[in-house]
Length: 185
Image 1 (cartoon, helix red, strand yellow):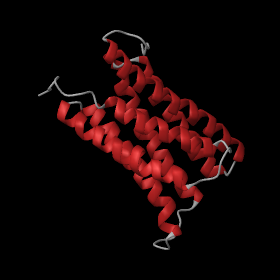
Image 2 (cartoon, rainbow, N blue to C red):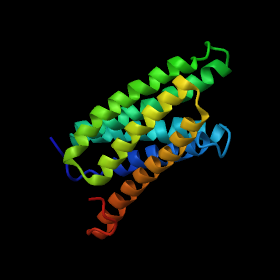
Image 3 (spheres, rainbow, N blue to C red):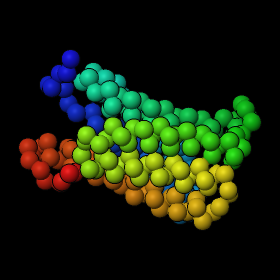
């Protein structure tokens, strides 16, 4: 049963995804090295905030939002774990070829989730379509070792993340003004 008196958790989840994606892909595009800031954002805003948003989507009865936010929240947490666990000496690092398969599995998941957006707004459709492309590019980058593909993925990821930020802020602002101020189609 849906409770329309609950706040929309979508903007929180989209901001957690969008801001973290932009920051990671500024790194992927070659502007900055990997740093604690990216990993902290991955754990707390990309990870935990999206999981919280997903739990709230569950409360609202939104299976799509719950599945997307909880899954992508755990993507960020596992990605940070894949980076940090070897640095702590807990386990051997994942090889690039196998990391490509990790990213490709996320591409498959995102591609199927994209079909769930076909009944949603164009902004959400763009986010999931561009995220599918991003995961494929990152997988190919890991499989081939091509720095060029990695850089292209970085720029594409910045666009994907910015689109999520836009949709999140459009939802917040449009709700605040009770009219369409920022269109999301």
